[in-house]
Image (cartoon, rainbow, N blue to C red):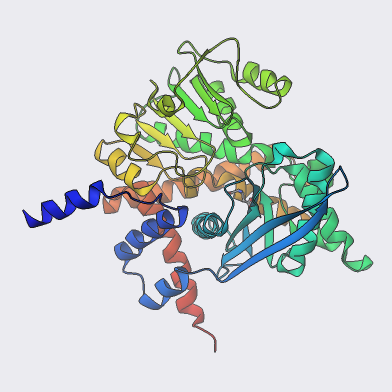
Length: 435
Ligand code: GLU
């Protein structure tokens, strides 16, 4: 009885909003317990190696100077150089950068890449700045990061609100600030560049393609053909669009979409290409798309009727508030950290499968690895080769996680974490701790 009273008290107390870091640490802790992770290695992996915060001035179009704050968190490099994206968003802060950097460590380890994990970005709303201002912001940020990034040290990539153009500016700035003879040898300081400037054919679609493949692999294993299945997508950016594009090709039907500007649905289906073309002409927004109805209450989005739900925007979207009412039987995490621990618990109790971010969206960083190899070796790969290599790599990762989860009776996230952490643990045990 006493316990029950205490619990009720705890429930009614106003709980502060949980940060992303709470989420990733709880996920890490439960996997670490599961595999009996060595306590020393647990200590190392529980904190970040380096945290770089830079404040830098940029001249705006009106002649005024604005100061921006940029972050780069380097979580771990036991398996290779730090790797991970840079996002431009008002929610970027040290907590978000730490959590996202940790997720990258698990993601690259699980994918079997020779990388560690890092992440960062700038706290800003890019829609408030002109293209010329964004270019100067990006170049000045790159300059401020200086030797904290580097092609064999820490390799940024696109993330939320950054793209191949951002990476082209970064690569150009970094290369331009090297001695002349070293410039081209530094092209792989960032990945996700435009195909004409050292970028990889297919890197644009790699993340969304990976999301689609994970859904396809799961559907094959569970005898649930994609043809006729309904899916909803949160975020119609690079990841959401390409995932939807490939799912539609396999006969699945997109029935609802949400972005930063609005939510729409049409249970008869929304054409992916038609919506994409509309968005290009509508300042990047899905709002007021004429061939679907608006969903007026944006909090109801995840509870709409569908078989598959793809959160492909920001973190902490599926929570205890909406998890009890979600209709989808499969959640494929295109975003990083879209489901928080409380939301996940409810989904698992309801028998809903989650393909976790560190597996589901790993096509992006696998594509980045291919780009990095291509630059390092002075090669140019063709699209069909890239797609075939992605397929093979993602199938291997998917099977590993799926089999581990079945064998150990775990959910797929815990299984993915166990595999990722075990690989890093092995590296530490082999090498020992300096000195
Ligand atoms: N930003 C992407 C991610 O979260 C890609 C990272 C990369 O390619 O380094 O996985």
